[in-house]
Length: 538
Image (cartoon, rainbow, N blue to C red):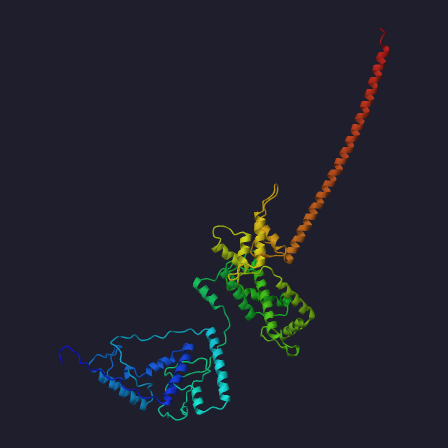
């Protein structure tokens, strides 16, 4: 052979042994398990197959530190035959190997394959549960009908590592201990890759203790400051409004009893309950506890929250349930049995049912649906002023458009009509002597007097639903105004009488002067006539 030349020897591909029935069934079941594990996001089967594969270099007598297989070396044929013989020996003795086939690779370094982690979300779990329930129903149907040994073998899943004393017969699942059921939901990996669980450990949700609020306060180095203006029920910044409402809900669910009516909170015996609620909520923030606006905001949040809790109790434990099956005891620990029975009695009255039906019909008549999501009008207006209207103050019409525009559907027909009417009223020319209407007046006129939109966005201070203090103040103001008008009227009456007296006196004076003038005239006539009579004739 000439130097520098290689022999033209080519190795024949060794004949693969025919797999047995057990190996075929085992490979089929491994494929099924692999598909199930991939849907679950688990890489257990892949690691097991990689560890027990015949291509693993740990079984070869000469192992290299780098991941390559040199086929062009001189002793490559000997290594190949040794690996083939070792693979057959291991299969006959231990049963740990899947296949004796050895492939010849290149001198190319292969990086280890990294498994892609798959997040197990609620949607994925729901899909897996639905598929597993379908598989379980199919499995039950198959188990109910008579099957042969071959059919029963196909419906079972064989473990990836059979024991050494496993025998191959008509029923290869005779001595299998760790079989994976097809309706299992999730499988936990252990150190030896043999511990497989078939259920999900559902951990109950812990009580919400405002951990995110605590982390924010810890990051800021102080409690979140909250400012509530006079006449408002919520803070303007969205983050403050969200945390304020969240903390109020947590305090209500964990520390405040639920009564059957809002009036029960205002009784003398229950006044400490309201003070306790306000104290626990305000203690989580930096805010003025003695402010009237803060107290009103906390009371409004308590009123809305306990009403919502009663509504949820009604939806879950009363609606759609026969009268003889309604609970006689309270379903929650924060409500007493007596309050629950009063609440059930109230729900059962025809008057309450009629009012619920009327309220449902009234809700269907709402023409301008709010499109601000979970944010209130006041928080959405604050956000728009910070982001969209940085340079100029938004008008009432601009706020109406932004508050009633859906991201998916846009404006509704009623909103479109209202916007057209508003813009037409603004662009209408004004006649001489009249004043142009402001955007607030236009919005108020188009929406009607019963609309609270302008008040909810913070453009109007006074609300239609006034409190008792406001009503009494208005009554006192009206009384003072009436008193001042009465005094003014009395003064005018006196002035009129004085003017009448003066006019009468002036009239009498004029009459006297007129009489004196007449007397003087008569005297003058007499003197003239006397002078004429005394004059000598000419």
